[in-house]
Length: 190
Figure 1 (tube, rainbow, N blue to C red):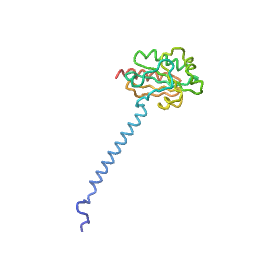
Figure 2: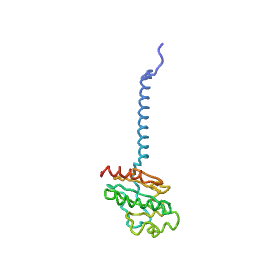
Figure 3: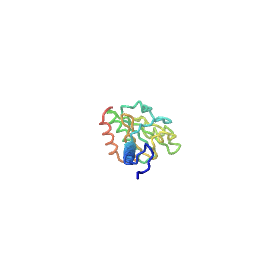
Figure 4: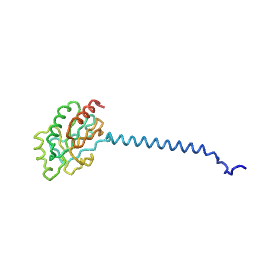
């Protein structure tokens, strides 16, 4: 006795099982690739650096991120009341002096803690009369939110294409930052 089947349908399910397996395998591979890209994107920070739109600047305003394409950028978020603020500002000045000649733009972003910290004159007094790099006054913390900064100090290194490549939180040693700067600047211009 032959099994009952509808016309046009086969009882051979091996072909449909194979197609199901192939579709499932392709879906798994696509998901793994996309997940890997997403993890790599987050782990390496390959997203475009947001615009810096502070409430004021100490000294000269920095060029916009699109204007900085072709240069590496070090964005340093700090609070003047951090115990390492003076050390960080000295390091930034040294990096600006040393690496500025080979394509690094240093930009500091001050994050206020109290109303006194919102006064541009008090920050100017901390950094000296003529800082060698632009300092943004992030009075409403817009810049910090755009970069996802929740603590300080935080150093963000942006590559020549305008993508965030490194983020260092609560920096107390400069060796890792220096290595990241060397590696990025050694990549050369786009």
